[in-house]
Length: 110
Image 1 (cartoon, rainbow, N blue to C red):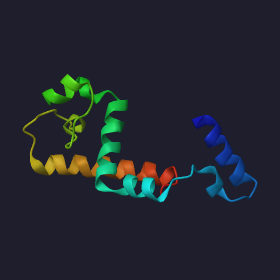
Image 2: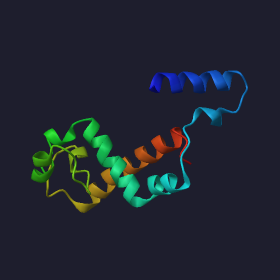
Image 3: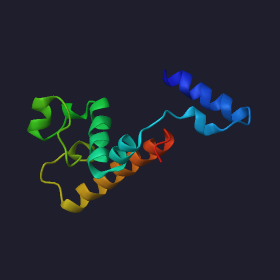
Image 4: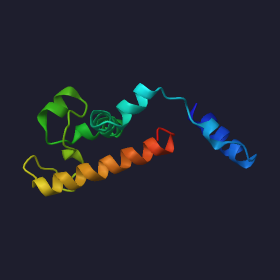
């Protein structure tokens, strides 16, 4: 489905049509959730899960659950540590948030 959607977006843009047609429809409630703090944090955890970062995560509850339990993206640190400085965790969390917002923009949420 991803390939088809991407192909459609390219075709629509080439034909000079409205590229907005290539994006999936989102209800106002869905859009509001995806752009909320809770929605963004959930997407951050989903991205982490997709890469199976929980395998090496120093947070025991993530390994036990076999998925990211958040809220901090400890698994994204260069040197994995539960006792990482708050500034470093904030930097990693901000970077993950930026990645999620870029993906949401790419799929037409905002």
